[in-house]
Image (cartoon, rainbow, N blue to C red):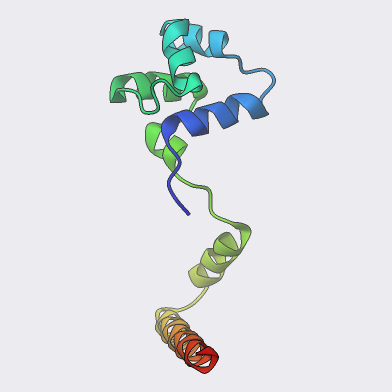
Length: 116
């Protein structure tokens, strides 16, 4: 998965929230409507950091949280599970995970050779 740029994330947020408009965001962030329009049109995909921070503050978040990709449900479930494990159990789980990857890679390369 590639990291989406600031403008893509902002466009998606505005599209998903009927209460959030480009003009309203501009006013709340203390920016011109033109600045927001340029971001949303793709003319300026990544704003200056001070502009991005004003937008994020107006949205009630930080730049770091805004740009962070949300984990898929399985990732959240795995993290919750790991938090409940003892340090020894975590080391074992890490070993199991590495072994699973090794086996998977080995099977994949064997499968590729068999097809040739």
